[in-house]
Image 1 (cartoon, helix red, strand yellow):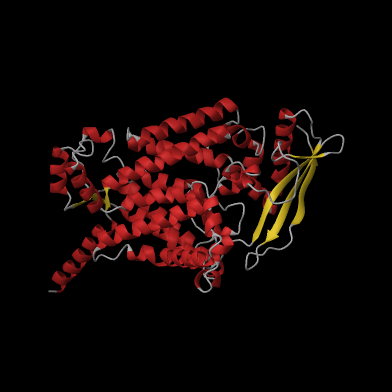
Image 2 (cartoon, one colour):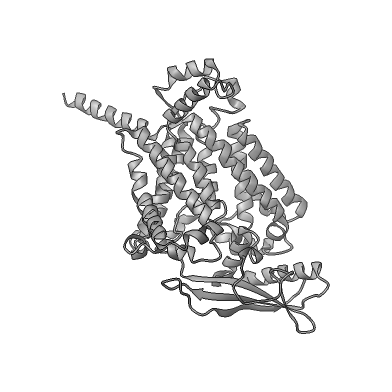
Amino acid sequence: MFLTYTKLFLHAIWWYIKRVFALDTRSLAIFRIWFWCILILDIIMGIYFLIPFHSDFWVLPLDALLDSYRQENVRSFSAISNALWYQYALFIWALLTAVSYTIGRKTKTSSILLRILILGIHGHNPLVLNWGDTVVRLFLFWGMFLPLNHQRSIDNKKNPKQPIAVFSLATFAFILQISFVYIFSAILKDHPRWHTDFTATYYALSLDTFRTFIGDVVYQHEWLMKSLTAFSYYLELYGPLLLIIPRKQHKRRFLWVILFMAFHAGLGLNLRLYTFPWVLWFGWFALTPSFVWDYFNLWAKAKQITWVENDNETEAIQKRKTSIITQNLGLFPSVLVLWALFYIFSRNLRTLDFDKHDDRFPRHLNRYGFLLRIDQYRNMFSPYPFVDDGRTVMEGITPTGKSVNLMNHSKELSFDKPEKFNDIYNHERRRKYLTNLRMKKNSKYRVYGANYFCHLRNSQQKEKVKSIKRHYVLETTLEDYKTTEPEAILLYEAECWR
């Protein structure tokens, strides 16, 4: 009797895990296509900024990279050479591989190769990376194990009757890892500005560098900002937990997919965060439940939209959609997936209390995460958004002693707040680079950035500069739309040597 009840209990647990952590292969196909479209656009922008950010001429020479980031195991064949032809070849190779992966041609091979190439590109200049790049690396890692090519791919033409719902250790780890992003982020936001007076959105939108024109509108309504703060905080804290409740699981999951997509759309429309909100926005497509696509297929068939699915595919789906197929990854991939999941969980757990958890997960273990670049933890706007707002001013000194603007050659030098911050930061990579140079630990790289701006001025303008001063105009956000008086801080001063 005991063995019978034990078997029934274990069978119920297994049924629960398969039901909650299975993914629809059509959802994974949509995720593959749209996520890699974002990645392709990012690679194209990387090609545009290749010379300043990925060559030996300017902001981070190869010797400085290998010397300073050796402890973090930043290694890639991208750092073999900083020759322009070599870097262009790697970017174009990554672009072609991303296109191959998007259309689902030799998907498994493309996913492994693409991740190696992206790790090389990201490892070449860590000073320009943001949290969206971390998410990209993680999605590329899980993409090596997920069945992303079972629907809407060239690979699928050879085997069109692939299962609709699939469960594996990869789907299990993928859903949990997405949950970690939000749960640990919400726990780190244990501050009254998030859960008591709900002013976190006010302080986030007070950062003029990040606020968009839509954020300007939201910034004028205090009640709306408080509502968005409460929505964001409680959605991150409780939303992922509700995903794993089995009762009416598919309908509940669809609701939370919509809410989280709305959350990330709000982030991307109100704040300049580059790819971060949109990568996760497309990531939620992977969790879309099966009934959404079933209803869509019925609608498409009623409208006689033949390119969605033909009759044979629809009939095959009706036979397969009620069952969940268990996919066996193999021994080594399974061990790697479980180890990666444990590492990500442990690293996030340590961020909650370093003193308490550092002995269980010591810092020297970070090297293993850096080796695979699964070093994910999210502390953006934790425990509350920055109150120190500011902007960079690059002052060039001509041989006659005149001060000129090195950030925007068409405008006069000014320490006043600009009407458009695009006049200072024409791209997120540039803003992130200048922000990182402000940090004391990166002060030794300021000389390379200074001479990059010297070269831009001297190669494009008749009036040359002989020296440079880098200032940071600091303002502190106060309550009720008030700020402290701007304070210009001199961060760096040097002669131009290029």
